[in-house]
Length: 186
Image (cartoon, rainbow, N blue to C red):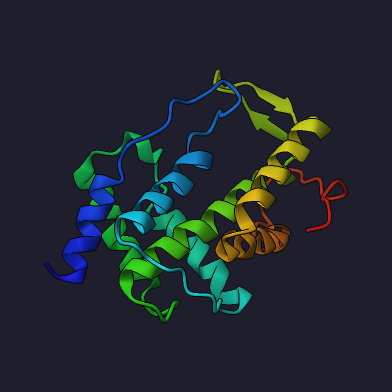
């Protein structure tokens, strides 16, 4: 079996999702990590350590957003998820120097760190019922500590969290107010 076929098969086989709890209003905050973890385990990948400069990192984030995160990934058919994975691999091909499977997984881990941290930087969040509520200090701290536990063994998640510091610059025109003064030492 070719490497491309193995990646396609891993993407398809990694399509099982945890139940959504009330506080997990956005399933993608969990699903991206779970999916990347399952693909990495199925392919027995050892994560590469050398990370690109932050400008490339932001381009990786954009590739994930534009090619993979169009809707909740748990709502995708296997065929659609594989198609999104193919498009993502094509987009990040020149941004990361690893093989396609490693590129795919590290892009998703990077996005997971970035996405979760940028959500924590927002003043409010959207509940599962679609209402907007302010983040409490406890919610921010809990979310941040969860990310810290994940990045201890995964430098790509930490890299994504570091990219979130560029959130203001990248999203200049966004109307969301951000709150940075609570961020703990990493």
